[in-house]
Length: 381
Ligand SMILES: [Zn+2]
Image (cartoon, rainbow, N blue to C red; front, side, top):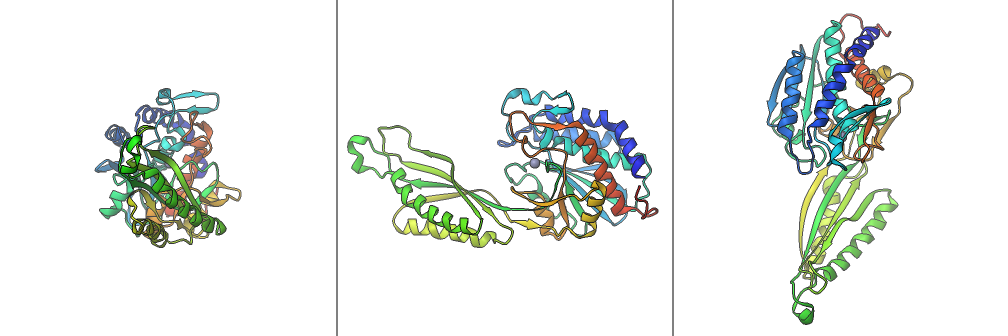
């Protein structure tokens, strides 16, 4: 069966690349979160063309194939980070690589997961169960139009056997991720011309003791190998001769698997409250937040995935947020494995090796077959 799937996928490669090109041409940049409707429409069209069932939940698209109770999710996001150059929305293949924004993260992965199911269908794989193909927007900014919406509307079945997502893992499997809490802090002041400076309140100067206090927390966190980064974005005032009425900076807190989101958030809130008690006006906006998550690497899905990849694949924790966390929180084993390369994703020369797309489609098809097969459970060829 595995050899047949592999051969069929080789035949399907031109279609997979064509679909990926169409998706890359749609500039579904996030932020700000645009062209979602176009992207969702193109995905629906492909599902219909391949004769899969499909439905919409807002801007999310859910395709389905197969019948029966056992359910496996293939899940991916179609938003991309903003282009570094506008030409990134003109995809092209040069040598062994496919270039374009989202080629690596993760529009080629969407094609791989979709065509993996197409190959199972074409090969008449003896399967008892269903595969749900979930396509979401709003991943890059942890927004509420994607997976968060599906969770809020109870659209993800907690009884599922597992979930795979083709994030750019550079050949390893991610079975967990750090949590994140990203805040924008605005320190309030009162503008005044420099000549009557004493009549104003200098928001920049008020920010300094707050930042110093945060740096002390940072030292403490560093001792337990946790992360707090200040000032990724920072701005103050509007002109050199005007007392700044506002000073704004970001805090990016990344959590270890054993750190609790609420507790860590409370520690930051305490520091803001201390500053407020000193009379500093502070507003805090949450840019993103997500819990750390972890799926053990010895369950049935991880074994099926490892066997399909071959060799001894490495299971690692992802340095960033992963949508596996939504599934893991429901008790569904969730892993990321995709064709892309982490190092070039989000960059000005984003690309994906074409052979990786084929390889990941094979791995998804084989893994699904191992998880859902009825007739040939010991066929390991
Ligand atoms: Zn991604």
